[in-house]
Length: 478
Ligand code: NAD
Image 1: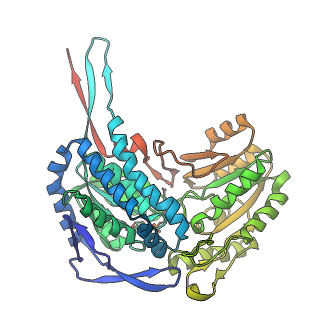
Image 2 (image 1 turned 180 degrees about the vertical axis):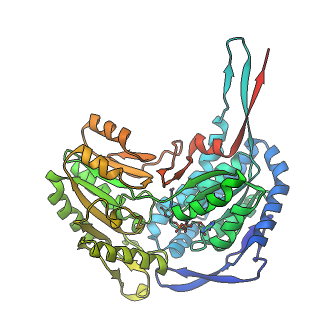
Image 3 (image 1 turned 90 degrees about the vertical axis):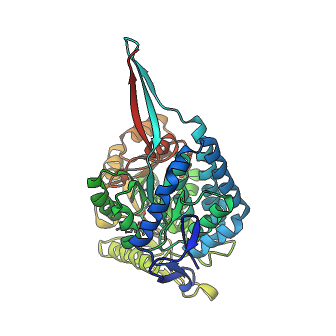
C-alpha cells in the first residue's frame, strides 16, 4: 500500500479512497494508491510553508549532508528500489538496477555537491559602482513527474529544489508511484525535517491540477506530455509562477553514410528501443543517407528481431512491458495509423503475448516501419513506444529540413565521421540536446531541455540551481 508523505508522516488521502496500481507485465492489480485531491495538497503546502523558514536558513552544508544520507539509503536498498521500479513500470530489472536507481542516487549526490560550487555574479561599473546578485530560495515548489523514468526524473527535480533551500510538494505519476513511496521512507529514516519534502499521490487532474492552482506554490517543475504542460501553463502562467516544462519529443536520428557503422548500429538499437522506446530522448525518426539505406535497413531489422521480449524480472530480457493498457492501445493505434498512411512494417507491428507468468501482460513487438513521408502524422506525432520509422535522404540539407519539420525540439542524434559536418548540423538543428556519435551520454552539469513544443527552460547543473532561486540585484554606489 502506497501512502502520502506529508509533514514528515505517512498518511492516507483525506478522501480515504484508493485506486489500483497495476503490474504491466501481468496486468494484475498488485497494490493501491491514495486518491488524493486539493485537500491533501492544502495540507502539504501548509507543511512546506511552515518548514520553509527553518530549511531555507539551514546552512547549505547541512542540507547537503541530508541529501547525501538519502542517496546512501537508496544505495543500501538499491535491489528493493530496482525491483519496485521494474514491477511498477514494466521495464527490465537490469535497466532499473543499472540506470534508473543509480541515476536517482547520483541526482542527490550531484546536487549535494554542486551547491558548494554555486556562485552568483558581480558586475563592477566604470565609476567603481558594484552590483552583486543575491540568490535566495523561492519558497514552496511544485514538482510533477511522469511514469517512464519514475525515480530518476522525480529526484532530478526534488534534489536541486531542496539543496537550494526550497520546500517541495511533489507528485509522481499515478501509474508508477512505488519508488516515490520508498523514497519517502528513506527521507524519514534520513531525518529530513518534517514538511521539507511532501509527496502526494493521485491523479493528474486532481493532485496535479491542485498544484498548478495553489497560490502559495511559487514555481512548478514539470516533466510529461506537451498537452499537460500546456494545461499547467494556462493555469500557472497568469499567476506568474516560475515554470520549467520538460515535454514531449519526436527526436531525429540522422545517419550519414560516412559514419562509424558498427558503433552507430549498436547505439541505434538502443536509442530506438531502450525502455520499450519509452524515453523522451529515444530517436524515433531515423534518417539514413541513401548509399547505406538498404544495408542499414537489413541490419537494423535483423538486430531488432533478436531483441528478447518478455518477463522484465528475467535477466536476459531486452524489452519489458508497456506501462499501461491505455498506453499500449495508443502505441498500437499509431502502428495502425502507419499502415493506413502507407507504411510498410518491416518487423514487429503487433501486441506480443509471452508464455507463462506474463501471458496477460502489455507487450508490443519492437517495430520498424519504412515508406512514409516525413510529414505524415506517424512521423510528426509522438508515439512514445517501441516504434521507429526509416526515412532515406540524399543531402545534408534534406536531412536538416526533415529533422526540423517537427513541432518538437527535444533531442537529436547525428552520426558522421566528418567533423565539420557534425558541428554544422549540430548548429542548425532545432533541438535542445544534440548527441554526435553517441546517445544518452549525460553529464549532469549540462543544460537539459527542449525547444519548440518540447518545453521551456532548462534543468541540470547551474540551470537548475538558478531556476530554483530568485535573483536579486544589489547595486552599491561607493
Ligand atoms: P503526462 O503529461 O500524462 O503526465 C505527467 C504527470 O503530469 C503525471 O504525474 C500526471 O499525473 C500529471 N498530470 C496529468 N494531467 C495533469 C494536469 N491536468 N495538471 C497537472 N498535472 C497533470 O505524461 P506521461 O504520460 O506520464 O509521460 C509521458 C510524456 O512525458 C511523454 O510525452 C514524454 O515525452 C514526456 N517526457 C518528457 C521528458 C523530458 O525531459 N522532456 C522526460 C520524460 C518524459
